[in-house]
Length: 125
Image (cartoon, rainbow, N blue to C red; front, side, top):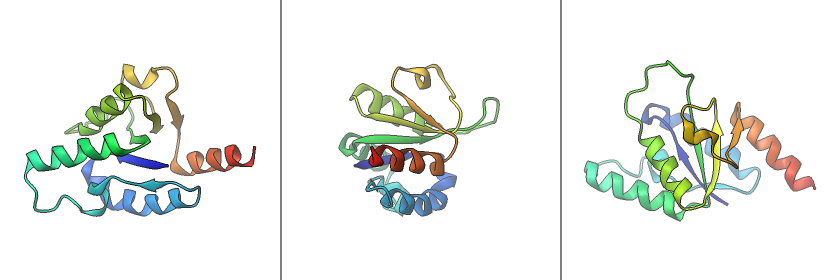
């Protein structure tokens, strides 16, 4: 399964490492931004790359933060909305931040390790 990882840009290096864990359960991160694939692009080009990566993915894994924590930006919420509108698998890592994170079928995990364990358990069935 191709998973688009959505998070604050400052977490890019962390997500690059976490993407390796996805391979352990047969998934691959297709978010080019995680691997530096947007360097040198304009904001318009970056938006186009990100939208196309979300559309191309089978699922989105959105990394969230505790409510009340200042979070500049928020592109991950737009990406989550695109995935929601296209019927993708919706995975949160962290707490629910907004009403759309309560949408039926949204999976919520405290950590990537919890997600990986759930995938292993599912694969054992």
